[in-house]
Amino acid sequence: MPVLVMKFGGTSVATLDRIKRAAKRVGLEVAKGYDVIVIVSAMSGKTNELVGWVNETSPLYDAREYDAIVSSGENVTAGLMALTLQEMGVPARSWQGWQVPVKTNEAHSAARIEEIPPENITDKFAEGMKVAVVAGFQGISPEGRITTLGRGGSDTTAVAFAAAFGADRCDIYTDVDGVYTTDPRISPKARKLDKISFEEMLELASLGAKVLQTRSVELAMRYKVKLRVLSSFEEPSDEAGTLVCDEEETMENRPVSGIAYSRDEAKMTLISVADRPGIAAAIFGPLSEAGVNVDMIIQNIADEGRTDMTFSCPTDQVMRAKKALQDAHDSGEINFRDLVADTDVCKISAVGIGMRSQSGVAATMFKTLSDEGINIKVIATSEIKISVLIDRKYLELAVQALHDAFELEKAE
Image: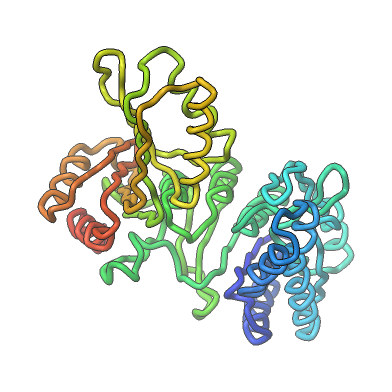
């Protein structure tokens, strides 16, 4: 039988009624002749509650016990979904990560999937099971301990299963009905895309679009897994949602496909750093060791052997970055006159595979922001992306203006 993977996020399984609605969708796919692997998240709000209990009990917690606790939410959902399907007459069984097994490395709370042997589930399909309901977000370490994959890890679980089982498709059910040209809450003109390339989706996900977890898109692109993002609250349809697929399969080739933003960004500048070979490694090595996620980097032209180094990072990592750099300064690894942090900025990005072959995107973006009186603090580019840092108070204005400038409300 062909295999289909269906993943239901927390809002899609938030109540027993919603679990029943999701189970009916699964039943429709079983009726089409699929063996279905269902990946479930914890019921909406449950993971946050469990994390809160952990922090209240032990602020400096043991990561192994953290994983054992926070992974329990998915176990509950998997059992309830299996029971609901059984009540509908669909042969279903719940599976925890260790039962599959989902083999991961030992990086607790941020584990990476290394292997998913298909034999256990495949054998059960051969015996008549039609649906395997798998607890997402979790796996098992080489030491036999429960691991978790980090926030949004159920998306990664779903794609990994689709790759391991050669699934026809991986459907990600969530509270939105697809991928939009930008956040509909900011721009009423935002348009749902029928298709988007893996590369564009990867950029959008990494730049702040919260539709799919970045690692899940990376996996899908590597293993050529067709992803479909769709709403669990709309009527089932073969044309629903947005298909994330190879570039050759996308219809649109406009220069920009979407405008993404990240609200919680900070700009940090090291003033008057010694300009010498190895200075970048001396700065960003300690930041990496401290777990600071550096994004944009700009180095000024040196003057009399000194230069300024600017980078961006998430606002919740500013204190960590400051400490790492100050420690490096105190130890003599780097020398700078001052460290300035601006925590009132945001990142706005234009993304599109059409940038490879069409010119003028940067000019349009910069002129649009200029016409709105918005000053650009930092610019970074890649082959299919242009990102800028601007004052956070201009976020909504910038998104709306750029969406209009690139006419993203119009389908090609």
